[in-house]
Length: 116
Length: 115
Image (cartoon, rainbow over all chains, first blue to last red):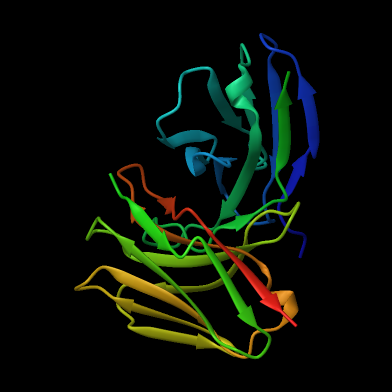
């Protein structure tokens, strides 16, 4: 069973640009969550998508957005990049049980974004 | 919101010794507590988890304990090996109004197993 796939693995962008990151969840998983990992702030929740709808959102500015497609693949977009957006962006996929609760979260390798 | 504290931030043990990492959480509504291992250049890997209706869980050399009253949970690794060297994260999960869970992570423990 294939794991969570994130592309690209590495990105270098300049301030003011925008970027789109992609995540393919484990087959059968319909919940995709995004996290930002930095040395200073650790792992922080960005948002979660389920059935093509954003269900939950963390405390990040509106420059961070995402979407999910009918095949459960998800994309995350960051507009007007700032130096502080440099981070490892991680995607996690989960299966929701019959009580509508996510089960275990499995992470991808991440996309390392560097803003210069 | 939920806050998770993790200690120690670094831990160095001799091969074969045991390692213990401790976490505390603030929100009594948290009901699921996973532990992740992250190696350099990789994403976090789920190694063990425990739900709030269980006090202890073991999987070979790894065990997790949960004290709901004190809001503490701990990771225990016995007979440590060099390949156990990595950063370990604890997390607490709370059910959200939109369904699904939000994971709040601790700040990580860099474990080094020395030969």
